Image (tube, rainbow, N blue to C red; front, side, top):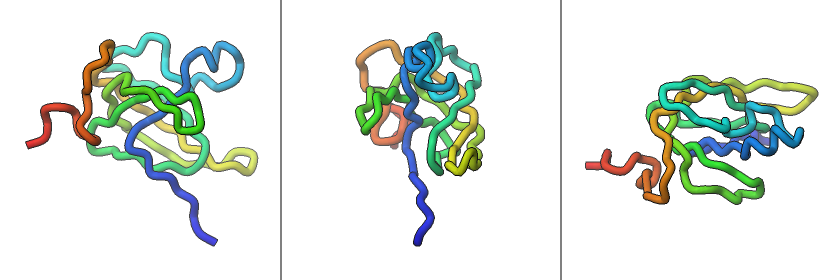
Length: 117
């Protein structure tokens, strides 16, 4: 028996319509109007580890690893694992540094474009 942990290079949340339709909690969804320099809570099922030392992409997921291009550049400021009704979850906070409203490429691997030497 091992410890099941997932390492995520991005934060993948659902479309806000999932909350509006009553399918998800608000913390599981990308806010309708992302604002730069604003901190938002997030909630994910399972035990997940995120990069905390710099920017990562915020992406939208439809589930089953169907992912969008990055919606924003964020930094996760806190991530905590906890058990609720026998299931493990990860919750925390992320701060938005840039919102992407175009089809341009904004990350090279896991680095923001222009930061690699």
